[in-house]
Image 1 (tube, rainbow, N blue to C red):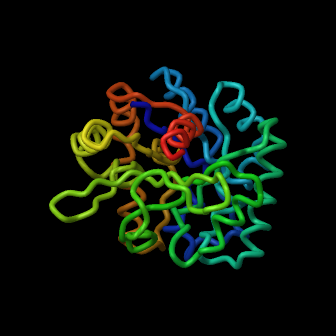
Image 2 (cartoon, rainbow, N blue to C red):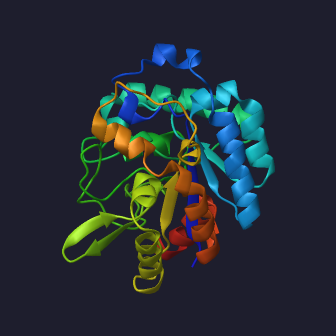
Length: 281
């Protein structure tokens, strides 16, 4: 069973956890670590012998086009993560479309090919944004991986399907939600990010195996380049919960990732979408 491997390309200061203490107007003044960290992810994928999808902010693509071209030339998929990490439910439909177009132009120019996949910052397509999927289809996207089908304090759409679905009756767009598992009446996140860093490795590997074998569906896994960078700057003014989520177990992440990549079958998100599209016909 081929699982979708993805990396959301953003710098350490661009996360939702720090949005109340770091102004976007200050981003260019801060230490930039996204290029070195994304190159480290490329090296990690090469060591593991896998290909993946890099959901990239347009802000990053505009400033580091050579990085985006390296990702594409290495055989990985380059997809869109929006312009500068505004969550979709904070935008109007018109602003969302403008955000998509601005990011699309920067990513296509850097990668040499138009992105066909999209991931909303912080999985922020949910019940509040019924207009998001129609706009994605109108803008030519083949798929979105922007839904977290669970309850969370920052995001989530608990009533959404857990696996690939077509959100529109009149368009081929596919939504590929991040992986969750149902355990003892509770739905748990099992698709990577901070959950993968903080929880025991055995849980994540078990969850992927359960989704593959018991439910016969692919897993969707994600992480960020800053998650393998334990030397990144510390933000002192952020809430304690945010700092704990962001900084905990960074030094363990690379080793855990390498182990996971060797224990399951991984590939680009567009390849998994293609197999799921055939299932949904």
